[in-house]
Length: 90
Image (cartoon, rainbow, N blue to C red; front, side, top):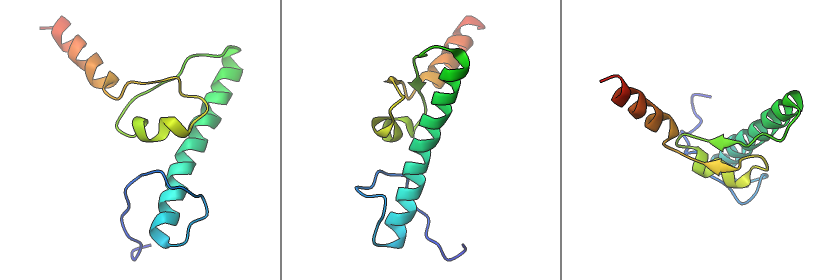
């Protein structure tokens, strides 16, 4: 693994790629997409309802379009919440 290149997380056009970098990117990207959809499906099943899903964080805008489960993307939600807490406790 020491000889594998560092990669950026990004969508690839294919899952089966023709070079190492794109193959790694596809694995990471579609792995994240599958994890999100799988976890949300289990949570909805446990809750017994079709809960709304909000994606946050830097990768949300990259991953969300490929998922079946994300309803809304708010990349700065966590930081906005911290700002509100700070303002209320000043």
